[in-house]
Amino acid sequence: MADLPDFTAVRSAALELTRAVDDLRRSAGDSIEVRRLMVDAARISEDVDALVGGAPSGPPTDVQPIQIPDGDYPPEFWADASDEGVGRH
Image 1 (cartoon, one colour):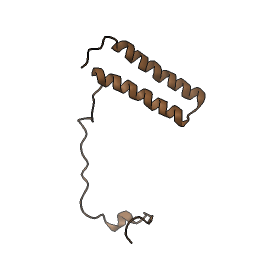
Image 2: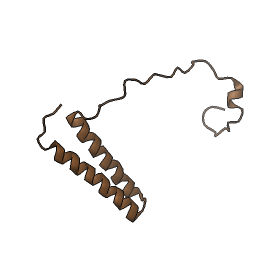
Image 3: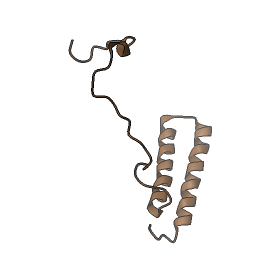
Image 4: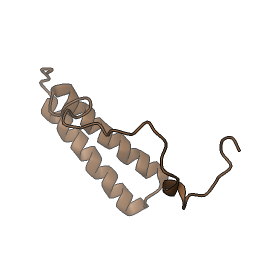
């Protein structure tokens, strides 16, 4: 965990940025540029938390992997699928 004397100010500024971008979305509409700003503001908040140790970095540890069988799927599985012309014929 980093020792940052201005951490409270940085976290507050990141929260204020997130609120400002949300206000912009409400007034300017939901354009691709506003969506990108929303993602950027969220990432800044996440990075500030990760820098100081407020949020875990990396994948969650309680996720269980899903087993996928190696064999072929039964033909009924593909009954309602359409051929998009991909692969060998």
